Amino acid sequence: MTVVLRETEILAPGEGPSVSVPGATIVFKARSGLGVSNFLVAEFTADPGFPGPRPHLHRVHEELFYVLDGVFDFFLDDQTVRLGAGALVTVPPGVLHDFRNPGERPARWLGIIAPGGLERYFSEVHDLSVAGELTDARRRELRLRYDTEEPDTIPAGHWSVPAFVLG
Image (tube, rainbow, N blue to C red):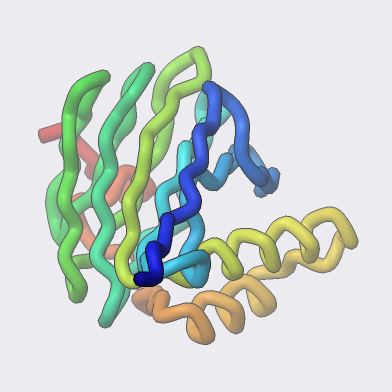
């Protein structure tokens, strides 16, 4: 009789492979392609005033954001909501979204993304940033390669549009 034991892993707070991207740090708690899982779990820490990644959508990926500390504004299709610790946002495929840290202190969320693979996007953004080669064109090219589409214009209701009012 063959007994197969799964490998287990315990990560303390702050432990796990990490990458820095402009204005934030991402600690990977579980990555896709390891074992039988096909999801990503990441702890995202946004610097005070972090402006967000720009409105975007995924055709395949679903994202869950659980706010751990601080406050985040989440843009979802055409509205913005401000959420604090304990709030959960579910973003199914096809929903235009964005987030930012409007606060004066760091804010953190725990994200679950399925299927996995976006950890490679963040690693490439990190590498380009460190090399001084992270341009808007390179970022857009990477996003398209990793199931991430950006609209040509910023939609109404987004905080970067002058008439933004928090809803």
